[in-house]
Image (cartoon, rainbow, N blue to C red; front, side):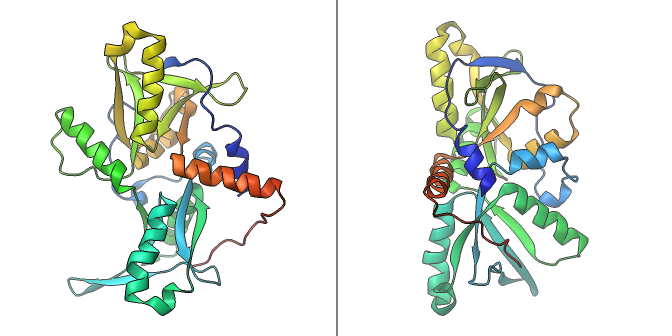
Amino acid sequence: MKSFVRWSATLGIAGSVFLVGLSGIGNLPGLGNLEAVALPQDQVVKKLQEVPVFTLTNPKGEFVVLSRNNQSKTISQVGFFISKQDAQKFLDSRLKKENPQLASTLQVRPLSLADYYKIVLESKKKSDSVIYTLVPTQQQVASATSMLNQNGQKVQQFNGIPLFVPKFKKDNSYLTIPLAKGNERYIPFFFEKEQAVALLDEFKKAVPKEADNTEIQVVDLLGVMEALNSSNDPSINKIVLYPSRESINFIRSLAANQSAGKASPAPAPKK
């Protein structure tokens, strides 16, 4: 929670837009499963701490484990949603119909993306049979799929958590932005296509001659995490994961509540 509140002060895009070269990101692989990602370095975890994800818990703070049968095999799963609205919709539209008594005791609980990552790694150590699934926003999956097909990549659906990155076509360089009042500049990787388009439109107005040389690249979150963990390019450290507008509003609400003395740290959920 404290990490989210600190992040709320840096979320405004301000100042001029620059570009920076970046190697190792041009063709990020879709890793498909978080278990394929190596143990993250501290810098990776720090970046993941700034992004909220949402899951369902009972009054004891325990995760809600859903089971389903698949070809005579039972699969147990815990869902973590990129969107708080999606998590609430899953609770209201599905669980309340299937098990209204249970659903009435559940709540949507925020964690950080770093918490989710650590839970998955810890489950591997314990040979946990539960699958911890990160659920993308379907609207952004549709946007990513459409963009890839428009660029000549024939895909039925983007597989993973899409990120959208404003960049230049010719030299594989990326737009950078300042955060807050510091002198450091960062490469924003957006969870929403609309955010990337807005930044790119701002740049095109400032530098019209470069407009035709710009595009938005679609990459997978897990591939970015792998690049952060393995690349030797110092510019990789400039990547910042920029939450969706919905998540930004949620983070700011936490900051406002804390300023008003209403927020208190909650205990970490248990499985």
